[in-house]
Amino acid sequence: MKTQAAANYPLGVATRGKMLNRVGYAALYIILIILAVTQLLPLVWLMLFSLKNNQEVFNLPPFALPSQPHWENYMNVWTSGNIGRYFFNSVWITVISVALTVLLASFVTFAITRMRWKGSQLVLGLFMVGLMIPVHSTLIPLFSMFLKLHLTDTSLSIILSYVAFNLPTTMMILLGFYYALPREVEEAAVMDGCSVNRMFFRIVLPMTTPVMATTSIINMIYNWNEFIFVNTFISSDENKTLTVGVQNFIGQYTTDWGAIGATLMISILPILLVFLIMSDRIVEGIAAGSVKG
Amino acid sequence: MEKVMSNKLVIALYVLPSLLLLLAVIYVPIVLTGYYGLNQWNGIGSMTFVGLDNYQHLLTDSAFWQSAWHSLLLALFSGISLIGYLVIAMILSGKIKGANLLRKIYLIPMLLSSVAIAQLWLKMYHPTNGVFNSILASVGVHNPPEWLANPSLVLFALFIPIIWQYAGFYILIYYAGLKNIPETLMEAARIDGASAWQIATRIKLPLLREVINVTIILSIVGSLKYFDLIYVMTDGGPNGASEVMASYMYHQAFRSFDFGYGSATAFALLLICLIATWLIRKVTATSDTIQYS
Image: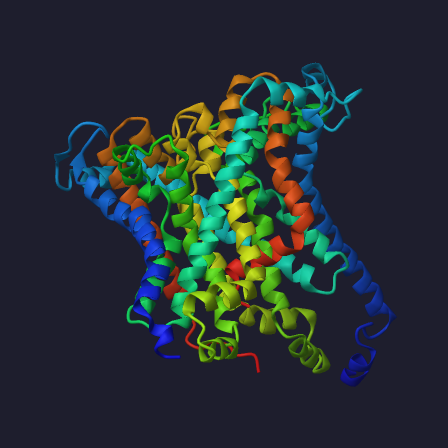
């Protein structure tokens, strides 16, 4: 029996087994599909009501199409508020923070994995404990520190906070990659009289491009969506990012469903586009960040 | 080689910027939070040292313990839902066509900001035009529940979007872990006549143990410090029915301007997160790490 099963693998033992397998397979598939639909339906509904006017929202069934798409919802939202401004702030703050985080984390990871010095393990430990610190337990002193330094309501307070809090995760992902890098190249470089700086910028950094891209994407998602720092440190409208801006903006439109939908769509589209273009890398990056392969 | 790779100046240049930032933005504020907790302070004027008053008050503050209980419920709920994610990931990793596309679809909500998710689900729960109550009304339910205004339903109603947000993330981590298990092990088991159930429980689960430990820590600590979505959707209401530790701390500090008491709460939150991490590590500690031969 065993040998027969092995010989017939993967088709199962006999036709009865095959039938059962098929039914079981279909049932499992249905579970997976239901979950996929559940994950997408709220967003489909959002897209639909962002193109409806209030009358259509109140009178049509939730998943009915509007008679004609009201693109003017998007136009009104984009032109009437500061949403363009928030958008621009989110973009540049995200870009600067991500670049700084990845570069600084690469420096430290290189020094810890490649250079010999006392205290390197302690420093690594400090960064790794940082993974476990809730943002909220630093918020009040950070707020008063920035207040004293006249940094509240500046983008710098946000950038500094983002970089510090993202360094540990970024280093965690970089570490595995750095440990796996071949050392022969470096040894050869040292033999040829290459300085550490040159080695780092000319040889090591280019070799870590893939993992830098991965961590950049993860950082980008975090920073783009971050809420609590901006909500706490930033008070004037012109310095707000998209998340907090959207939150306040929507407050003005309590009853205009189309405008709210359009605002939300504008805030999530960039991330969805990035995901469409680079989904493989994002998926791989998120997995790499939590599973050391 | 030795000499080049232990150049003190280079090490200092590579490590110090990040280390100083880490200390300034994470470690110094943590110490300060503990210290502020020993004072009475409205955030602007001078501090009055009150010793352990705030911490004593915290121990008997029923509103805080209620919020801690809600955070704990969320943590239990998230922990239990991991079982479901694990099952889905198991199904997904077993030669399913389109697994790659499915796991990407599952992940989409994870990419959106908590603010956008919160605003979207506020609309989903809308008493008259929300998806749930529209559907309930269309099948003849006369008095559909007011999900977020009902103190006994509100926590459950908030758990759903939180699950929706994170499901894809955990499924992806488990899936990546399962894909890391060498196929030859499963082949060998099948040839020995092991059933799919046996392979899942006797081979895959033990090999996933490390990954499962990581996800338990991530989900439980993540739940204990959870804030964004609840803050935007219900702000802890109605009447404290959905207050969690982080939102309670935020209200004490940035709404009641009781920064001393807010700091004591923030410090308690930090301790609870660190103790939880330590406890989970202790409970899930493996004496033998499994090596793939």
